[in-house]
Length: 363
Image 1 (cartoon, rainbow, N blue to C red):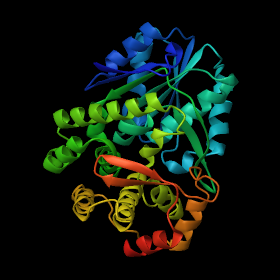
Image 2 (image 1 turned 90 degrees about the vertical axis):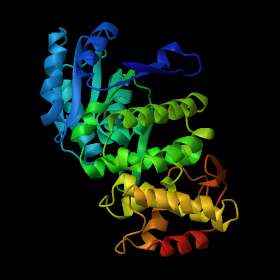
Image 3 (image 1 turned 180 degrees about the vertical axis):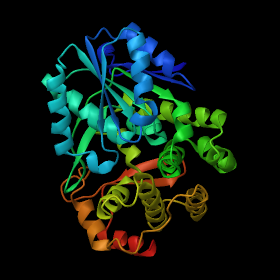
């Protein structure tokens, strides 16, 4: 296993390691047993991941002498809500999970966000560990301590900043990942190239086929590279008040599109469209060159990601969702825009008429 250390404000108790490798599930159990003196472990997973890896992981935990139980919820974004949260909490109470226990998130971003949210509040907080099984969770949501659940009004409107104790990234999980879920992660990797790493962007342009074919050597390289970018930004701005907001590139319209479609548009596809919208906005405001905007659109399309807004999603609904976005300040909707690939900046606000025009362009 290779390790990346996340150091947060010199607070050792809040710092942790991201351990990466391929086929490391057995070693994960060993490391947990060595580093986490807990009386019980509750492994929270979903109906997609649990049948594939749940019992296997429990067996490994028990071989290490650890008292572990598996809790399974329905897969999908629609489970990331208060009803599911209270249901899981009720089961934890029934199992006797206490402050000497640890929660383990075994799944994608929904499981990680939900488990972290519960851990941050249950008995005034207990530790949790992230074992992300989707590419999106491995490169983004498992790192940085953002937790949350969705409300009818929008995504992640109820949440906390609460760091995991450890993050384990096993590339082997990607072998069984459905294409749509794999593409969700690709969108975030493209985002890292756009906002921080021109070299990574060029590698993605050059190695599109190898990435799409899930070449494990290429994937491990880009996953580790993305993880280092994310951890570097989180170390500077843990609570998302400054530079960390550049990670929201493509998410302003992306989250609104995702919610307006009632989650029929996946997160990755929604962010892909949002990134194209942000690139076009940057170009129209004379910040970004037409050449860089074209490269961004071409890479997103070549990756097989969505490059247009579905006709059934109304512009008015997207604008309305943007107005209730948790990232806005006062009446201003803050966009992350670009000066060039690798050089983002946060714009105080973008004229709503321009946003509407670009949404219509993308239909």
